[in-house]
Length: 224
Image 1 (spheres, helix red, strand yellow):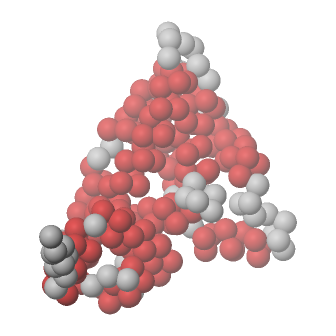
Image 2: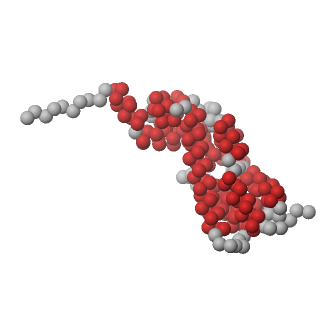
Image 3: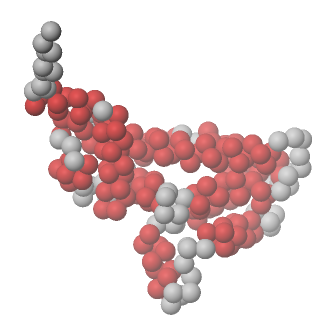
């Protein structure tokens, strides 16, 4: 009995199969994250993205709908990952009735982002830093109003520092976050230049200790 030949896919069918491939979606995601982190949101065109990811515009639109949809997808995934790591560390610190140390609570907040300075996570951290100033209106609205994860840190700090009012804790956490957001590649390049190469973020454990020393001190003095 003769074997029937396998029908060939038409170019349109082959393109459709590639668009539906989960690997294509992830490749678009990672190339977009890299380009946005390195060059900024407005300076990356859809053509830049399709060339880098080796896909056509239809594939980007199929998986993400638009450039803004792609930006939001990257932001949501990375912000969720960062906040999940923080929440897990905070839970470990605050298990039981207490008391617990302020430094440990602050460590749960700053350790994940500090360790994201590693080569594996550096791009994701740089993307989130850019999102604070260059993100879409929707991203900026989330940054302003989605603060539930931070309220858990306020609660924990109040338990560790009953002598401070909630208002005072909120102010000090606000300044702490400002320090954390000052971690872009340009910031560290300036640090390297200012110190004649003596200060770099390469020693991540040393960097984490210095950050904790500095931030913890901000919570150690009661208000006048």
